[in-house]
Image (cartoon, rainbow, N blue to C red; front, side, top):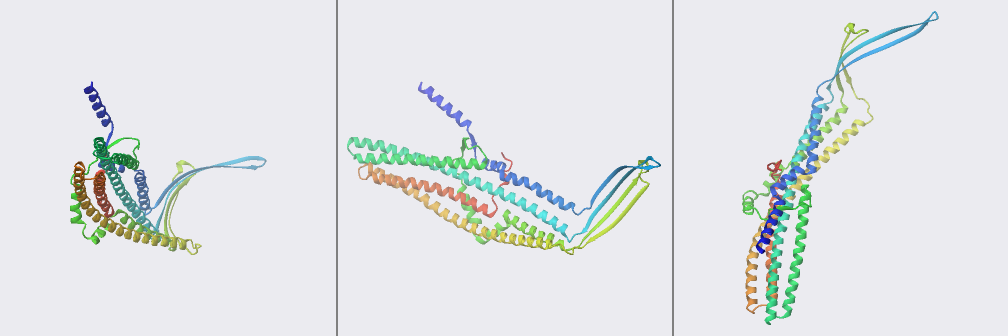
Length: 441
């Protein structure tokens, strides 16, 4: 009977795990790139920017229109006390064009402006994709980190419960005091409380990840709870080879950052806006061509024909300062765009330097915490043996155990801090990859 119940338990767990969905880091990034609403709206907005480029291109061509008309009229009048009337019908048609030959170079500036805005919008979308990748990695690492910490806390509970059983038995035999039993009971309670708090942090981190990905936070997923093989060693190697010169990193970032490229194009677009506004001070030269036909009957449609061509030169003399007002606002916008680009460059330098220094510190912390785990493990082993032989105190064992748990916790936190900072540096350098994850649902 016991074997049968065990078999049912195994089958039930298998069915439950199979019902849960796997969610790897790669799948999470792909989902984020396909479901992020801000990205979807930004991508849709690109169509409007592309349409503006087409409209600006067509502005170089003449405006051509055709028309056709029919008119019926009836006149009534009295002659010698009699009402007489005359009727007339008129058919007309024509085709004409109007072509702006010169408008102060406004049409060229408008075309340049629309192209720059379109390219800037594409760069903004690319940068948003990089942001989604980095945010997903950070949130996913937070989940894995909390999963690792929960394992340590649960192991701590089991260890303390085992110690409680041992101490209780030794108290029954009279080798330890009752105070040691109570002390260990408190220790077990604190360890169980840590498990509860860590579980809550884990569930919160899962909810934040699922919410960011646009998934149902009530769904259960299986996550990869181990670090990638050789990931940290590979990052250390790249850090040693590629990230030694801080000035070169900044130069590389200014070459690769999509948001910086977008800021440069927005500045050029603002300069085009100044040209467009200034064009209002210049004369406008327009060419007009018309060809018209008309008759009182359809069969005589082409009897009356008229062809005309002309040029119109409009010179602005007094516009109530409207042109000057537009020019001033355009110049202010251009100046603000320049300031924004300078601020972005300053922020890029600051972010790269800080992350670069944090990454170096994280590498040192990783080495120290790794050594602390080994040292605290050996110390716990020694104190436990001394307590078993009656040469040590329970307090020393508890302190050693606490130091060991803290050392493992710090080491795990250091690992994920190092991984996250390495991705953050790539994000600030503008080289974080996103194309490999697109459309891979």
